[in-house]
Image (cartoon, rainbow, N blue to C red; front, side):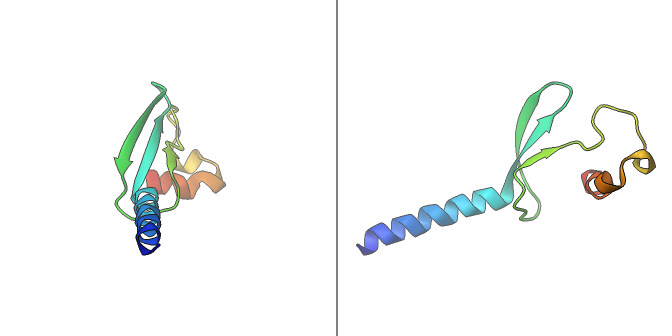
Length: 73
């Protein structure tokens, strides 16, 4: 019984650590996905460029996306 509980806790901890410290980046132009390691633990799993393939400046982006744009650059 203790061995099963230990295995379940170990697997759960491993999955949680992977979820917090790894991510997937979706590339707009080439429709590819890249697996990467994050520099800090964040629950978000999928990332993309909020600017996209456009030549917009940071000031021209929508106000609700400005924070994500600053974090991305």
